[in-house]
Each structure stands twice: as structure tokens, then as C-alpha cells.
Image (cartoon, rainbow, N blue to C red; front, side, top):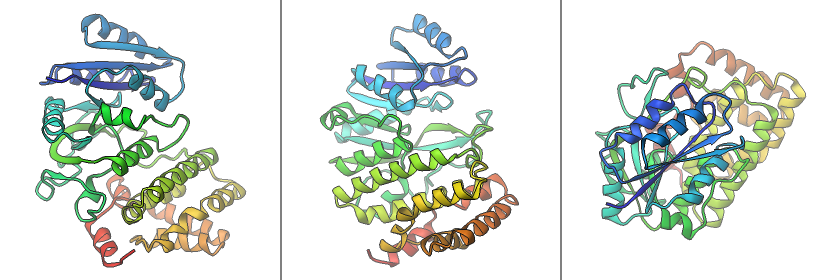
Length: 355
């Protein structure tokens, strides 16, 4: 059996840390290198990691000053020795056979990466009824950047429901961009656009916890946050342009733009009108890509906001943002999520319009 390196960055994660680590230690696949990175935690995270290291020789612990998840993951990549690499967030947990089923697929297919299915849980770790990707509709298949029917649904922007060939990562000297937001997306999109072979498996391998503070879109996105996400989106767009994958970008844009708009709507950190206007002006180039690439946004509230921004009618945009916020406040968490989640209807309409 080949070794898999599992990288676990953690900051003040004591609440769910044991469940996370135990889900790794009890895997049906045992040839693991478990790299636990304490990113300058102020709680007992570091001590918990040290205790686990004493119990299992497969565990390596790194303690570093707080520098963010990208630097923590990079520290893990720098010392990883496994043939394959996986990532897990410290408040989530694996299914028991996650490593085994992902390993079987990537090794048998000699792939650069494999994407697995996953399921949400509530804050207590109780699973939702259905996994994210419908198992009756999406079986195992080879992924392609040219496939706008199936691949687009499962080629998501996170790294934790995947396994990567370390040779592939090192061939392109892939690392997470420190200080950048959407660092998962930048890393994942680079992998998608440069890989020779990638596959999807319908097995649920990962449990993604919806904590109390992230059960709906964050409400603490500041002016600085949107400036940083703007910079990250420019990096992502450059990757798509440089690799001539703008066809795929259309669908990617259709998927992430409603989410960005809902962050703008929900935030309570842009109460000053001038800060909101500055944010909208800064992102105007990005919203202009909707028309340029003939992208469909289904929600009329969000479309109205984009139209106002593009016409530089910022007072109207702020009015529409407030009205949309009032509407979202009447919705359940699930309904709020559906407002920005991709759907078959969206992609069907997108496919009717050629680039």
C-alpha cells in the first residue's frame, strides 16, 4: 500500500478536534502520514495534537505562529512524504473508508486527483439526509473541463473532498497563496486546468460541519474582505484565460457569483454608504464578466443588483441590496442557501447559450 499524507490545519479548534483526528486514525486504510499543524492556537488545540502524537507514530505535529490556513497547509506539504495527499479541516470528519476508496480510484486510474462526494452535518455532527451530489444521477466518471453537463457539478472549489498525487503537486510546485482568500479555489482550479486525468467517485468520503457561526453566509465580511476576494477572483480569471478554459469559466462564474452577491447583501460591515460604493466600484470589472461571457443568473434580486452596478447607479444598487436583505431575512437557512446554490435549471439555461 502506498502512503497517503493527510494534512490537518487547525486554529482554536479544540471543540471538534478529537472527532476529526479520530476519524483519521480509524480509517480502514492504515498507511497514513498524519500531519497536524497548530496555527498559533490560543486554546488547547496544540496540546491535543501533542497528546495524539504520543499515541500514534504516524502523527507529525507542527506548531507555528498564527499565519492562516494557507501557510499551515503549505507547511504540511513541505514535509509530506506520501505518494498521495489529502486535506481535512479540523472541525470536519471523514467517513471510515474515505482514504481507501479514494486511494483505490487514484491508484487504479493513475490519476492526478480524484474528487469524492460529501455530506453536510449540523453543528452536532448529525448528517443531512442527502449528500451534496445526487448519487442516483452522478456515478463514477472521468472529469473534463470540456464537460458542462456532469463535471461542472462536481468540480467544486474545496480541497478537502479530494486526493491528489504528490508528484503532480510537486511537478507544478503547487502551494496555497498565503494571505489570499478563496485559496482553496485557486489551488483546485489550477489542478483542474493542468491535470491530465481526474475522476469523480460517488462514495461519500467527507462530512462537512455547518457550525453555528457558518450555517448561513457570513455576516462579518468587511471592506478589506471584499478587496482581498476581488484580488483572488482576478487570479482565478487569469488561470482560466491562460489555459483557454473560458467555456468552463462561464459555469464557474454562474456558480460563485450569486454566493458573492449574497455575501454583499448579508454583511453588516458595510453600513457606511461610501464603503459599500467603494466595494461595488472595485468589483464592477468582475460583474461586467456576466454580460461579456453570457452568463445566466436566475435570481431576479441578484440580477437587479448587477444591472445597477454596471450602470454605475450605486444608490439604486444599495437600495436593491437592502430590499434583498429584507427578503433573505424571511427565509430559512436552507432557502437562503438555495438562493445561491447551482441548479440543473441554471446549467440547462447556460448550455442553451453558446460562448
